[in-house]
Amino acid sequence: MSIQIHKVTANIGARVEGVDLTRPLDQETSTALREALNAHKALVFDAEGLDDAGQQAFVRHFGDITTAHPTVSAVDGAPNVLPVDSEGGRAANHWHTDVTFVLNPPQATSLRSITVPPYGGETLIASSAAAYRNLPDSLRGLADTLWAEHTNDYDYAVPEEDVDEEQSARRAQFTSIKYRTVHPVVRVHPLTGERGLFIGGFAQRIVGLSAGESRKILDLLQAYVTRPENILRHRWSPNQLVLFDNRITQHYAVDNYDGLPRRLHRVTVAGDVPVGVEGKESYVIEGDASHYTPVAA
Image 1 (cartoon, rainbow, N blue to C red):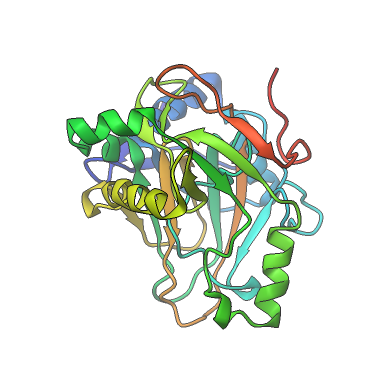
Image 2 (image 1 turned 120 degrees about the horizontal axis):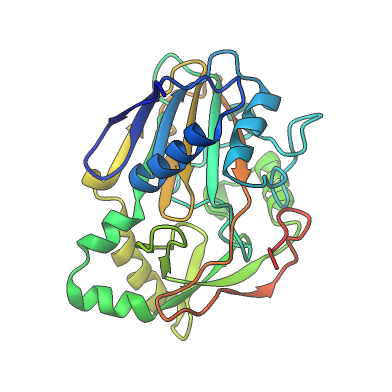
């Protein structure tokens, strides 16, 4: 094989060279990329010549793919591809893990650059495994015991008083099906056994605590995730693909490009039901996401 993997930061990220994403991968290459994703959490590829069909074919090497989103519309003619487009509204400039409000969130997310602004528009990706390792022993012990309710039924980006008619319509679409799911605050990765903080923007309340108490604890834990040492700051170039492990990372789209055109296409790999330190699985309170991603038997 001619694969070369170059580490980008100490805790997260690697650049991959020597892989043509427009062609089917052999088993040896596919295995090497899975191992690299397990080790580095986020991989950056040259994606020259890759289209929507090719992106989906590449991502399928890591598992079945989901439909685009539980509530948001897909790219026309491509029901498994989500447009991440500045013309569609405000950037997702909040820390989150994709679609954690459903029972089995995606195991991995791919983003492919279609249109990039001349400056800004970076994607930040943080290692929640490194965050967990950074916790003091007493705080780690507390986190191991906590469970959090994740929901899409709130407006994470815009204060209520600042919502205009268009933003209100987007929010109505996003929450057209309401989801509430309880996940462990510390998730055990099914392939590596690593523990990571499984929180982010959709985690709204700690089970058994008030909203105010929950926010203080979630903010405290989140501060470890977003330490600069735990973050890959990816500056997009045309025709790139970034693949990251959605089970043990968070990400953030930086809204620093003056509203210029920026478009990425997202394809996600169907995931498993999260498991906590004691071996217990996540559970649903509200919302059926079977049209988005079925739960493996």
